[in-house]
Image (cartoon, rainbow, N blue to C red; front, side):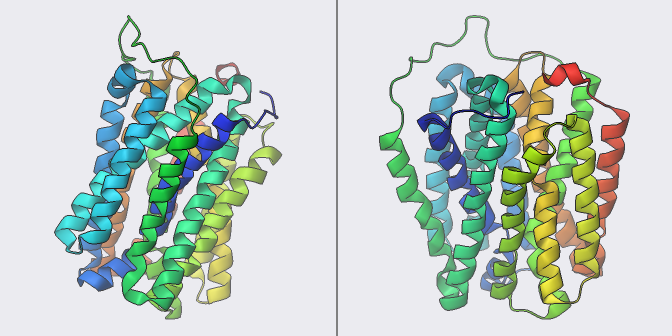
Length: 384
């Protein structure tokens, strides 16, 4: 695979499109402590917002190849951003928990459609440089997520009751991108052979399972790291939310730089190294009772998981027998299931046993991920 590529206008539009939806994910996930305080709910009920995001991703994954077949990838991305914008408006101006759950589903559906098709577009458009392009795109996307975390955290610190207004910053960016987009491309004509479908191999199925584990750990950490910080070091919900910014910074740093350092390694070796590093960083975070050490551990956690989304995407597409839209759809199903279950299960366990004990689910999942990758390897030639 080529290590370099030209960052075209198309690259930047794709990158900022996914960065915009990541702004929401980065700000909304860690802000669960704030939302829970606003609504007076338990960890379990607050965790249902993650479930709503997950169900939205499952729906999007199921429908992805159908929508792309009808509209094409680029139009599907814009459909996703339109639905996302509606969800954001609903989320900001609908305070009750029953309505924020619906809003999270709508925004999550648009988010998933956008991410699915920016990923498959990059894989198709950048060809041999896709691995590098996707890592750098996702690094930019993570910067969007980090900005979401810090903006929401900063607003909550200065203007406690107005933190949701920060989510509205996504809308003018989407509006701007729509008018500067590259309009000079062929009108989509649905392929005569129909949408991408069919059975998948056993390796593909286990790759999807391992990806589920990756996303379950990422969102479990993202949603409840602030709660663990508050429990361990006694920081406020707003300060704990702002501290999770370092998690996103670590992820962005890893996707831009670490991916280059280990690019020569087989993708399975990259994943095993990534899971192992994440496991060590997590245990450091779990044992810490010091805010500075906890922040450092969160940064290391971000680095550890940084490459996983891109590498699992490349892995799924390589195992899809030339069906990239189907591959990203299945990955979206896995991600959605992970997002739906992980924060909710951790919240449920946190209500029963405390968030500290509940968090021990994360290292167990990471070890399982390493085992799956080891037992179901991918041939080097499949990723070329």
